[in-house]
Length: 189
Ligand code: CUA
Image (cartoon, rainbow, N blue to C red):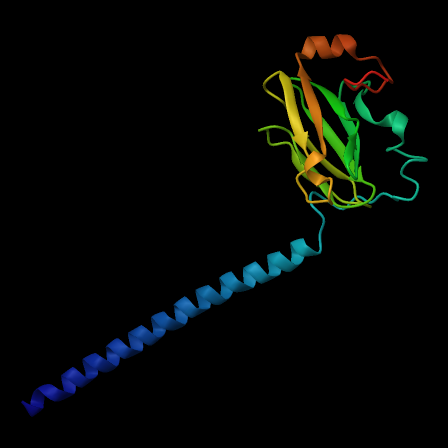
C-alpha cells in the first residue's frame, strides 16, 4: 500500500501544476482583454467620431463652408453630391434635405451650441454633431420617399422636438432639379 503513495502524490502535484498553468494563461487573457477595453475606451473618449476636422463656431455663420447660403445639397462639377447642415438648439438647418437615390451622398455637418446628432430613418446615415468639429460620412439611399431625421443626442429641453426630414428623390428627378452652384433643400427659400 505504501508503495502506491508516491505515484498518487506525483499525480496530484502534476494536476496542481497544470491547473496553475491554466489559471495563469486565463488570467493573462483576461488582463489583455481588460487592457484593450481601457486603451480603446480612453482613446475614443479623447477623440471625436470619424476624424478630426475642426471649425471655428464663432465665425460659423459669417464665413466659410457653413454660412447659411451654402447649407443644403450641392452637386459639384464632377457630379459629387454633398449635403451641408448645422444643428442648433433645437433645429437643423436646412429643416428638409433633398438627396438623390442610389447615389453616394456625402454629409458634412457641425453644431453651434451643444452636442447634437442625427439618424436618417432606418438607414445607416447616423452621426454625432459636436461644436467645433466637422462630422462627415458618405452613404447612399436605396429607397425613395421621405425619411424622418431626429436628433439623437440629448441636447436640452427641446431635444425631442428637434428633427428634420430627408426627401430621397429618384436620381433623374434630383439631377433635373439641380442647378450648378445652387444649394437645394425641399423647403422653398
Ligand atoms: Cu439636438 Cu437633441
